[in-house]
Length: 442
Image 1 (cartoon, rainbow, N blue to C red):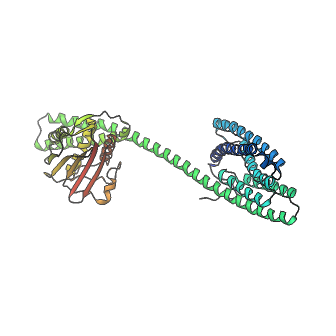
Image 2 (cartoon, helix red, strand yellow):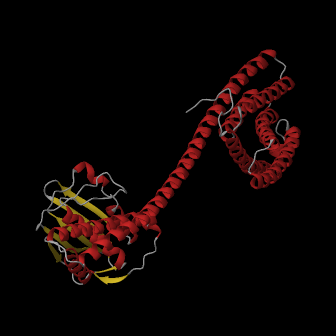
Image 3 (cartoon, rainbow, N blue to C red):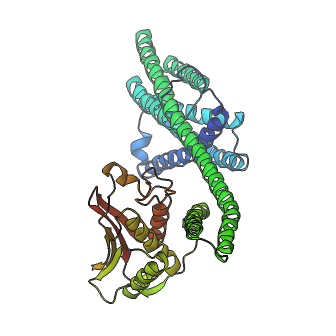
């Protein structure tokens, strides 16, 4: 916390901070005016209920006069605060008139603490008590620049001295109360500046956080645009290579050339997969509208496994085990296919050839659980918390050299959460991994 006990707040935020706290001060004046007005009106009501008891009190004529004066003045402060607040809402800028108004109201409250006690009790000790309360309230509620606080202290001290001289004849008592007043005002200054520093630093931290968030959003937007442009522009040269490979296949070629062409096509397929992930990340899955429908998951999962085996020609044994039939959930078929496709692809990617990959379908209470389990190399313990992060550092090359963008599981998590579900992972190095998707039954 930076201290500014005897100087203004430095830096580029000085003006916006002053504008902000001036608006807050005006709102506090309005609230304070209402509360103070209610208190003075209650006193007048009590006078009407107990006229004889109050009218016989010491200094009643002065009390009666000051009571009406406080009611009128407080009402004026309330009206003026509303006018200034409306003006502030239009401009959102602090003016000298606003600062002077808040300063005047603060002095008004302090003077009430002084005059009320002297008029009601003619007792300096009670005056000091109410004086202390008034100073404490002002120091805690309102924010002043250091020079405004000094002006307020001088005005309060002069007022206190004036009242003491007019109400006391003993010089020693005047000196004693004057000394206590100085101590109270020093405490008032320190408390006021402390809360100025505290509120200023808190406000500046909020401003800096807001600016950082804006920078992060701009950076994220730029990254998404860049990913979209790069991924889109990569499609054409890859498609050209793929077309050339297909044309060459139509000719009479030897086995070596055929193997090279197959390698080219395989590389193009992998490149397309990476581009799709980049484009998906660029579009931001969270803003895409999902169209869900009630789906029986046993048939859905069987269909995915059949398609996966035919299209990818995997030698791994992919098996579905279900303990609930039928099992219904609200899913977007296209998006949820990508979830299972990605999880199955990862399971095979990090498993030995012909290793088993199991898909389990379960139900617990009102939740449908889908587990994709492999018996491959597993995930290191220190990388488990990172696997769902975009562009994660936990991404690794597959056992057959498959490359990773670090985006697949991040997109999977977005899709699952869009389905109001959750995804988690359990893994042990050398024994395999289990990815568990939980969906609400539908």
